[in-house]
Length: 244
Image 1 (cartoon, rainbow, N blue to C red):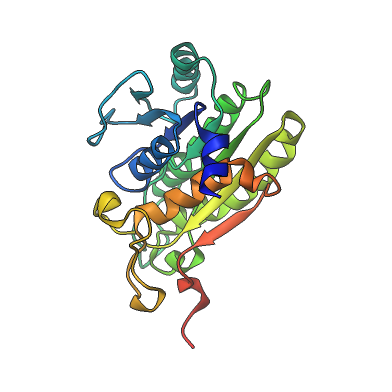
Image 2: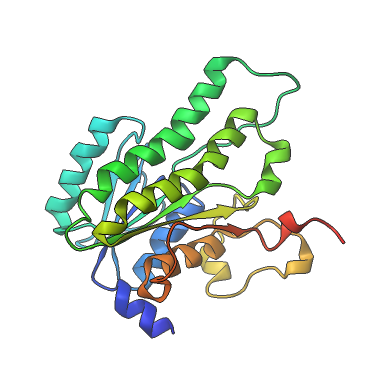
C-alpha cells in the first residue's frame, strides 16, 4: 500500500499552506518522504530545518490577502509547472472567554481561520482544473471547542461546510476536497522521533503528534483515497468519544 501511495504522489507538487513548526512542516516532510515536490508557505517564510532545493521551495505570504495568494500561485506554477495538492492548514487558536467577546475578535478569527482557507481553495484550485488534484482543509475536533474562543469554534466548525460546498463545485474538475479535524496537538517537533509509527497509545491520553495528521493528509491526497470526497474526518484518537 505504501508503494501505491508513493506512485500516486511522487513527482507531483504539494502546496503546504500555513506551514508552522508542527503540523504544517510535518506534512511537508511527509510529502517529501513520498517523493513529492513541495511549496511551503507561511507568514514567516521560515523553512523549519528543511533545506531549499529544486524540489523544495519556501514562500512567504498572508493567506487572508487574496491578491498575495494569486501572485504566489503564479510563482509556484512558474517554479514547478503545476500544482496537484493543497494542504490548507492556515489557522490560529484562541482561548475561551467568560463573556461574549468583541466583534473585532470574532471577525479576526473568522478571517484567519475560515476566509484564509476559502481564499486558498479558490486560488489554488484554479491551477488544478486541467489535471485534477486533491485539497485537504484543516478544521478541529469538536472536543477542542469546550476550551476554545467562540470565534475560533465558529470558524473551525464552518470548515466542514466549506469542504462540502467546495467539493461540490470542484468535482467536475476531478478535484477532491476533504477536511481533517484534529484534536489537541503536541507543540513539540517530534517528527523524526515518531516516524513512522512510534505514536503514544490510545489509552495514554496524550496530545496528537503532528505526524499522525500528516500521514492522513498524504493518504487523502493519494489515489488510495479516490472515493473519499467532501468528508470531514476527525483525527483525535477517539478523544471526542468521551469517557466510558
